[in-house]
Image (spheres, rainbow, N blue to C red):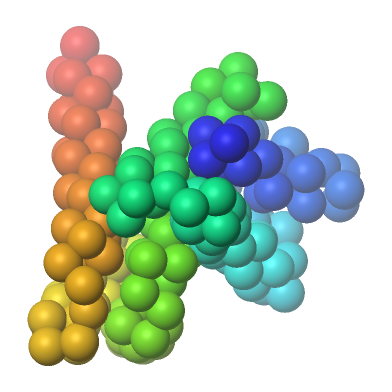
Length: 180
């Protein structure tokens, strides 16, 4: 279920509603940042919120079903994988930062919301989503250690690691394409 929630291509659908093929526009990334830059700021914010809600929904659904805490984090990870490799877009998805943020909020609401605020503030200052996400994760750790269950911290660390490793992998592929 987490994978299917993550597979909902919100950015693609929103851009398409405005006659724009997001897979060919801007960075060609079907995510909130590309919609923000190539379609409109309000629609980019809408996509951001919708992608965050996908992550929250994946975690909440697993929790409501009485799933043990470590498996709840796995449901969130499945949502992230669905966002990266969506069934409905021939497995061509976005970076997943917003969905990962939603998973973190679902795992630990207060720490996740604070981390989200830190991420948005850092994004406004740095204009770099990767660095802003790292700042948000650091904020999450600072806030969560004294107050958050270890399963939530492990889940957030899993999300941050997945996003970081995938970004590094994609950069490596891009460098190889440029060299060859």
